[in-house]
Length: 245
Image 1 (cartoon, rainbow, N blue to C red):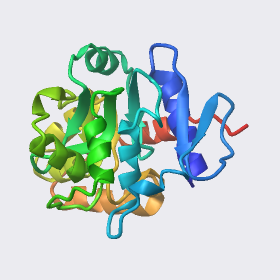
Image 2: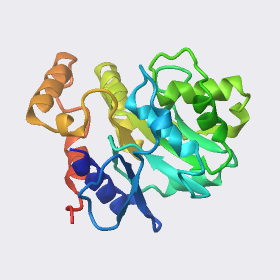
Image 3: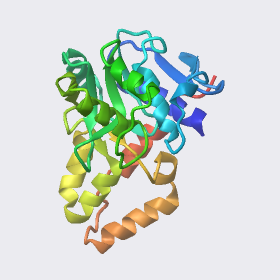
Image 4: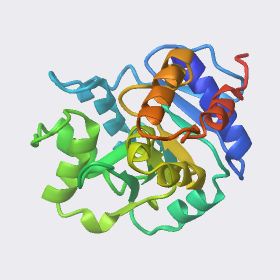
């Protein structure tokens, strides 16, 4: 499944990234991926393993300049759909002077780390704090709340900016919003550059017939006789992939 998700992300970037790019896949095992994707071995990032922490905690390695050598780079989760040209998102993210541009969490004052523009060397404190054993109260024991904890404790808030709220939206939160107001939910997807699938369902589940029927049943229960979300259009983006080499 991981190979499928990487391949489809590559396909979406090929369609919607408006400037030349290289996709680097940081992985704990060799993958069968499309030509053009460069694989990087992150099996050695064992210092980022901690009992009770989620596997996503390894994202903190992105803040170690010994692991990622690029001056500035964009990180993307696999569980998202790029549905529109990225020129606005990229232009704004790379024009910001802050060291980190990240998604504002949709449910609280924290962060969602599904998309990050990181400047090399500027936020190494995040990596160093974890290795040094710092701990924080975390709603979810993983990278997102840890990043937020370091930023607050070490006075780094001036070095953090958020993506514009319309650029990266939560699929789950949009489904919930659609129960109240279908037009608002539809507009949220139509205006988005990226739709993030967090928790359940992920994309391969969301576009399966079973979930489609479940979603339509919920929409009908809330009085929406026509489909609220453009699931066919999102599915086309998801399936428009580059085949593995």
